[in-house]
Length: 538
Image (tube, rainbow, N blue to C red; front, side, top):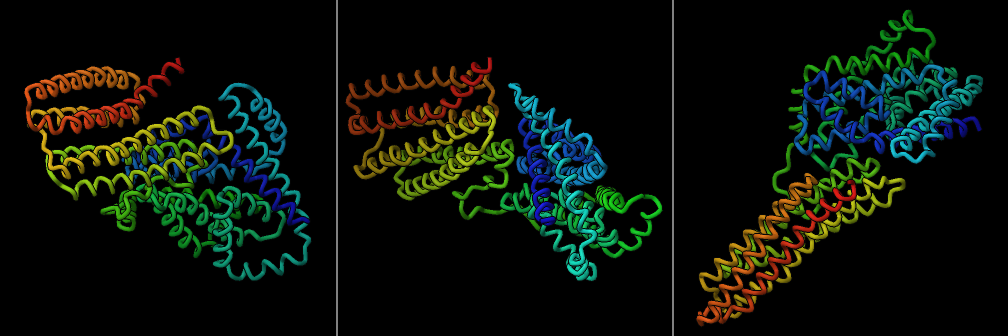
């Protein structure tokens, strides 16, 4: 029953930690992201930014995962990212030190304030209520762990269980590293070690070894979650290498470190968190001057991929990011832009199927549409999983729907190119028809305007700029209308003049213009979405 109570208290601690992190990310996620990006201007600022952000979200893993999206987009250098990760780990150690003190008197007030704010109507106060409630649950759980673990000091069985571990600290480190990964929280594991040490279940020297295991295990969740995204996985990989190397070096000096701490600290539990803080501060001081070299080493381990063997396989849709909606939405947008580039390439190549007889190009474009369809399916499934998450904010849900709408229009564009334009190209080749020089020139010009719409749609989608969206609509509305009217008038004139090529391809010519116009409509729809959102905000 004692062990069950401890396990239940640990679950409550993890739940409170998750509640606090969710409140910070949902209510102040934009502030966190801006702080992370601003803090990477140099390595010292990056460390400070990592500390502050981790104090806010109570999770170095969340900070490193958000940072991974900046690395992938080329917004942050790898060297600065590694420095920020060092600061995030140091921030977790500071949080552990703060929570190791007896803050139980604050717990009732935290829960009361949290409940009052959570039940209010304001968005910010609602999420701030989550933060206070999460902190209150964490303090409550720490008190329960200490209370539940107290009888264990009189247990006759536990010494028999821990004796083999004490004699084999390497196994103890591995065991704690695995448990920390399963907890997805080095903070929770450090606080548990402190509680067990306070109850006399484990001695001080052995607790220091376990702290090394918690530091190693705490670095793996971010690495596993970002592994399929090579650029994003480099900072977590560097963090694992640094922490593992630091743990190996510290392992041989644990007895000396224990003797050093005894005169300067009080009770053994305080010594544990002080060692945890010293370990992370030491790693930060020693590794910070070499972040550039470490980044180069990581790049050799995780180099950029050459040619993607399967372009239809998503690159950025990591399920591990679904718990952090802001990151998941950013990744969805990146994958959708990759899809847009594929559709743009299809459209760019489609014009050549009308001015030459190239059956292989038609086949290749149709294969590219199959790739676009697969990628669209992955994006749709990923966003559906995100939208099904509980307590997704309305703003985040609307953004997810906008991304899905744009991806759907891209998929429809691919279908028009595949099923309509390529069918017309095959018909032209099969009937051995040729356009007149004037007619082909009109198709080329109309194609250029529509291709430009696809490019502009990506800019509007990425920026969400209402002025850019309005300019796109005004420009395309006039250009497309004038180009279509001009092409129709000239086509009718050639028919009246009895131009043989025009007489034979009149239906083909008009169908191609019609399909290009449909593609332009799909491209411009993103501008309407941006303008509608702007009106709603006003």
